[in-house]
Length: 553
Image 1 (tube, rainbow, N blue to C red):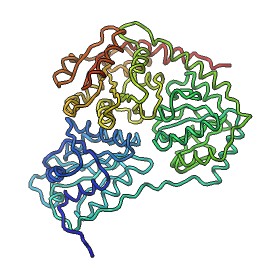
Image 2: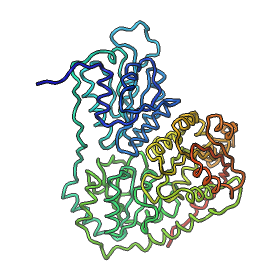
Image 3: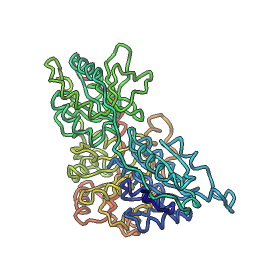
Image 4: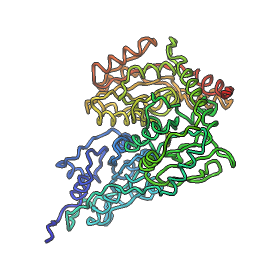
């Protein structure tokens, strides 16, 4: 007997979201969302009101990144929806599962002409995995289930549903929703596994490279077991950072920062690169040549072949299952020689110690990174905005535990650092969380300081101030152009923080930095810390010295 009953569309939509296990919706509602808002009022889902749709989108994407479940954000039509474009691209390129819900004017009959109307679905389609307007109440359960399935399946990304105002108010025939089934992941075939074993046994200097696609909770244990059993050294790309602990005895460092870095000497020497989770959003830290090094591609999907990346073997399927099978069947190979890699590791470690106690003020980046590392415990979370400091943290900041550095090297958008840190703090209220932003990136979504204070978060927001768009200014100088057009003025950040009800602090000497950060975490609440930074080290360390460095003989 059919026990279903009629239900309002917005109630059915919320029921479908609850069925997916949604905990939060982040957003800025408009009048076209009012039916949905009323349905949320009595829901178990918590609505977190933000001060801009970008902040909502970045928080939802980071929820997806940290949990593997799609984060949900909400906006109205027109300008509300267009403000989600950057977070959509952020989630899509960064492989973060996220559902965007937007409103729309009535589609059956409207008296407002084209007021605020743009074709949001067509706008979202190129930057999402799925974009659909809901035109029938009874299709809501199927569309919501399909949206979540696609958002969370590998490769994860952004999806979009548009709920028009008149559809949201209509009655549907049934309140039934669909069962939520766990994703089904294929497994690499046995022939490929056996070929991989032959390649590993036949290599003399194999090296494991961990990319963005392998930086998933369930893959980490399989990678660790493979490394421990084989003794093969490993490194990571920027977005693979933290997948396996940065203090591991076989860890070499973060690649794809500068082609002249010591770490790239190891990559050049490797005769087999086991490339786990390569994602095309990050260029591989090597260029393949015909007759050159062997490359094994281990990923959920096949390689997008181009002139510099054409792996000789592909193991397609669940990355964790692939490494579990390899680990089960392989034994350490006596002919493997990792002595050169260990010499590179020693040089990398020596280089990372440079400048960590430098007393200069404004502070140099090496000192900033080292001092933040001192303050943050192993499980502390650093959420980086985008600027040249991101490169310094990528190469110098060691990550003992996974997902303790939230770094975006895909869209690499400014303005995401603060909302990402806020999401990390909501999910991990007992852990130390720090947003690290340049003065340029911070001001792009600084209004979310009010949201952080309203939510009573424990959070430190570190602003590295240089009164300019520093990364572009560095690139401008390196290209030989005149220093022009990239400097700006800033507000009084201490007063600015206090105006939101947060605590504001300004560092005036390098030796003050660590004690001040400790004080902020001891007191709790939202703290903004302004520290002036001197980026003159960029060219010397990241370009000049490394470009001239000759790999170890």
